[in-house]
Image (cartoon, rainbow, N blue to C red; front, side, top):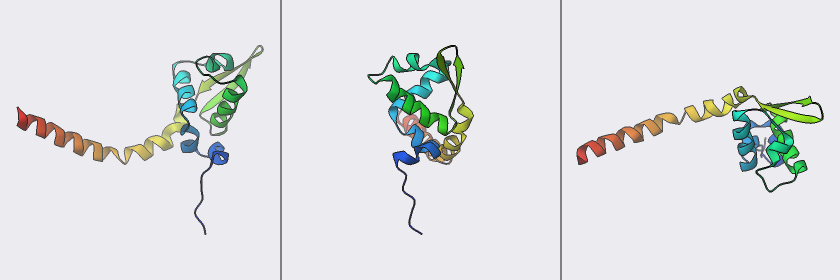
Length: 112
């Protein structure tokens, strides 16, 4: 069986692909503070609202955000628990960081 290649078309099924784009990471950062409308989310970017909506659609598809209507606005909320797959993946590498930090600490102590 040939290896599966992840493309932007697969971003809607893969949390890692969804967070790979810097605009989507910034959107998640903004939503981590509080919920926003598309208008508010689009403001800091030099992108159209439809472009922001496309990024939000990918985040919706992987479950990282939810959407609801409030009057005429679509509002978005973060669902950070869906980042657990990313967290588990990163945790397996933390032991390498701890070893290097411990070694750095020992080196700095020896230099004093």
